[in-house]
Image (tube, rainbow, N blue to C red):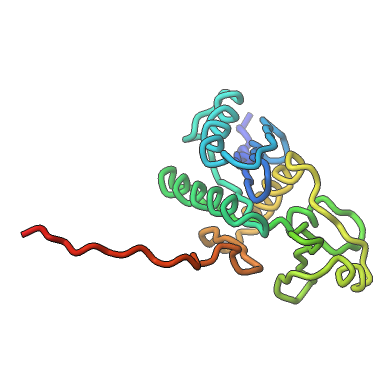
Length: 209
């Protein structure tokens, strides 16, 4: 009997993570199968916690970093520092592991979990929300203005569900063969930080000879 060719294609193993809000969340998927999931609420400390969390997920699934096929990272919108932590980590890991890092916005992840017509929106300071209606650039609007657009508002799910959705968005892009660019933060508003208004320090002359 002639052996039949094996036409099965191994599903990619994707490590997804997000720190765009007051949490640190990560998921490990092989295709549609969830291999591991962790989520911790934290207002700060994501930079110190993220990589150990990722390492725990990989080892918990009896895998190694070299087994990963792609990374999915949340690019926001959200907390500036949190977004930078996740994106810079993803870009560094992608370079070290020689695998793609796929940036996924919170809007895309919300829509991946929604089944009915909706307007994906992300909470922002001062009772505002970030929105990105189809065909428009992301913007920051009041909650009343968002409701006025006539679609039910879809807020982000729990961080654990959100990061799983990010992995599935990344998987869909891989399957379609999309052009994959290095992830970049999705900033919708200007940073809150501003130059100090205090009198600048006096610079002493350098007396060294």
